[in-house]
Image (spheres, helix red, strand yellow):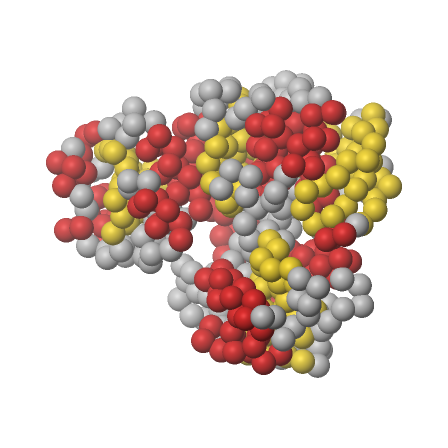
Length: 457
């Protein structure tokens, strides 16, 4: 294995999992990121050297002196103008995207890949938890921090590898899994794909890369122009509609926790209970259970694992819950994800006033889905919009949070920047609060939680 691995964009959720993997394997790992975060601080505490200024002079000496024993891994989010990226490229380093590195690792494992425009992080994390709980074990690269393991990387001597298969930049086409699950294939990343049809075609190609004799689990109703390899079996799953794998007899209990009967190709597993709230998570649990069952996990073990699952950070993440106030944080950044999150919370709190704070992610996504965002946010009673988080994009003239605000019909609507959010919460004292978005809104979760605690002292 390469002695040194240098990361450009090491603080990303997928990149940090790879960094941990190579560090554990004995490589000298270091990297750059734009800003310090909880993730980068965690990596630094694990002995990984990280700097935050883009300049070739900051590249560690051991990387510069060992060009032929260094692998450089970069994220597509790094701009083409990045000075370190260009210097390393000019010097002839072995440079690969994150997806290529993950693809290389997966070649030596029995890979189970979870893809989809929504739900893949929770579903892949739950699948990994099922395998761990069963004793089968797995190595897992996750798109979020598992609360059961407090990490986005699981390590095991097992042959199984669980991978969150990211459709952005067609990254998932680097994987050739033994089995795969597709949760959804909605229009997204149109800055990359251009059309919804192109998104579907990419998912179909991903499905075509399942190895002969493997399994595809796909949500019922997702239509793709698929051409599967020989002897690949296709199975459907759903929250409640009868198909190969589904849930029935749903009962929502205290804390939004569901119990249900799990149907596994005609076999009923009675009175399953999921450890996290929300109907959307029940559907994720059915999908994860289907792939685990097809991989040899027993129904009894599935039932135990579902109940012990603690969820994923920022996925219907209950940050504060008392009789007076419940605060939930969620990564939802697409209209369909927002709709699912809001409806899950509304089912949990019927008749309650629900306040949502949403930070749009990307100018292009805001432009493409302004109408759809408004329709989903109109399911709330009170809406706060924050300015668009640009991520990898430059501003687009005329595109901003106002595009969504102008289309909202909800009466109580505001546009506030990050510095105003905590004061808003202090003033409004919401009974049910939901923060939504994939940008840096996550940095407000701690201050909001502290504010709510103070209000109830």
